Image 1 (cartoon, rainbow, N blue to C red):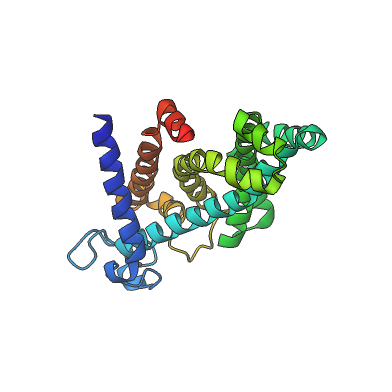
Image 2: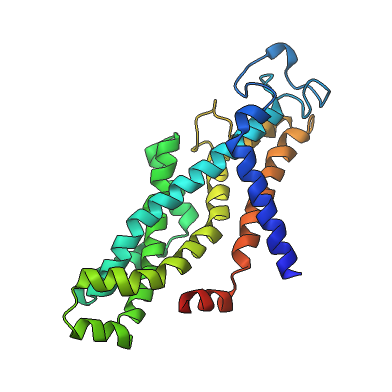
Amino acid sequence: MKNKLFYLAVGMAVFLIFVAIFAPLLAPYDPQHIDLANKLQLPSDTHLLGTDHLGRDVLSRLIYGTRLSLSISAVITVCTLVISFPVGLLVGWLGGRTEKVFSRFADIVMAFPSFLLSMAFAGILGQGLGNIVLAVTLVEWVYYSRILRNMVFTVKNYEYVMAAKSMGASSGYIIYKHILPFVFKPVLIIALMNVGSIILMISSFSFLGIGVQPNISEWGMMLNDAKQFFRRIPGLVMYPGLAIFVTVLTFNLLGENFDKKGLKRLWEN
């Protein structure tokens, strides 16, 4: 059953990526095209999922929302890993006072829920895709760096690392050849497991009015625009909500396939 869920999640992930890449070809209309004469239309042959309060095609906005959600979550993940890898490797290897200072800083950051702290940064920075990336990255890199620090702190005491050090190998060589390959796979898996949380966070920011600009096709913004029409046309809320649910579920299922034993096997390999 677990394998079936995993392969289902892989298929769903491939489908979402396909929709994101080929959004211009799949979307029947320009998602930003305003047609007030056809606003709040119910699903029909012309507009399969109807139109919103500005006459924009809902299906087209959902498709482009897939592209935006996946792309911005990928950018945040890459930026987070680019910062956390060198910091975590360096702190774990040096130890001592450097490790103590970083630990106190990480404790302060992790004392707050990541969503609330990211939301605070997003509120300070203001709306915009760049500000969302910056706000979430400023918080997430600390979590990854702490995980890396703990891994490096364990690996550097292994016999083969101590042997390389006793033979006069440089710190850079040891980190690159003996430590980085050991921690690379588990951290990437953790990053995969966190993609769904990032997408949910981005949508929440937009729903609260501190995310993307109002004219951007994004699922959280679609929910924010549609909440006043929920009783009249429930689909305006249901469609983006379902898109968020399916996407988050997909990446959660992918991540849950790598249980503790699976992580341990990857770690050992």
